Length: 288
Image 1: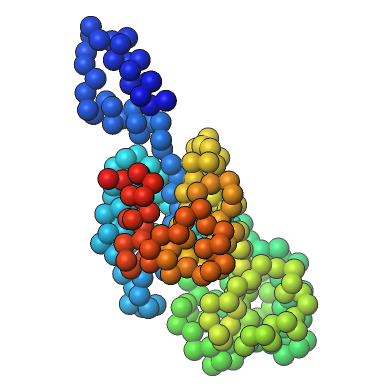
Image 2: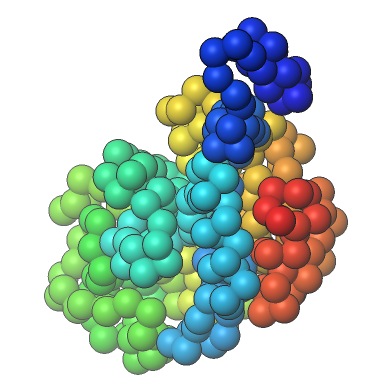
């Protein structure tokens, strides 16, 4: 198709001007623009929390993709407040945050949808009844609220600040974006209302109740630009990336990804710290 367009232009205007390399490049960009979405931890960034870095080969791949005119975005389960700095530090302007419920385009936050309010209230009520330690994020902030010191004492979590608000009542807030439950697996099986909400566990001491379908945010962004889902490319490595590994587009699992994700992938590349992103982009011919 691209060759036909270029040939048409060269024939139609052969007496007026020549087709320059720059024009060919622009035509190619028009015809093959893709929408790339990258998970952060274990995909873009490698290393241990607090000591993470982006491999030089990954930075180079991103730069080349951008030069080709492709759309680049982060796709993360983190809240917008917790992911915004990472987005900027990594040089991105577009992002799916809040597990698919947050949309940022050209550095502007367009939308964040909260969790189902009544389901969250039922879960918290059950936690109180059964003695589970809990906390919430009732807004777009870089801290969580807890009714007492037990959450921090149990988890010692430094991912985000835990602010104690005595007498905390979730019904005093209009929205709930995340719920945190401190317990060891499989103790959460005792919580019947947890089965009604999306959740995941990244730490042995507590779990996150948070939106869990990144594909929703991905589709919203592609729809915003009037794009085609088949032009989407996603990169991921963990359980919370499963939702964006669909048959509607190209899904690339890192070599360090969990087996369940690799089984759903269109292609499995090398580890994130072994030039995995760069190699995958080369394999598909998206970069030289």
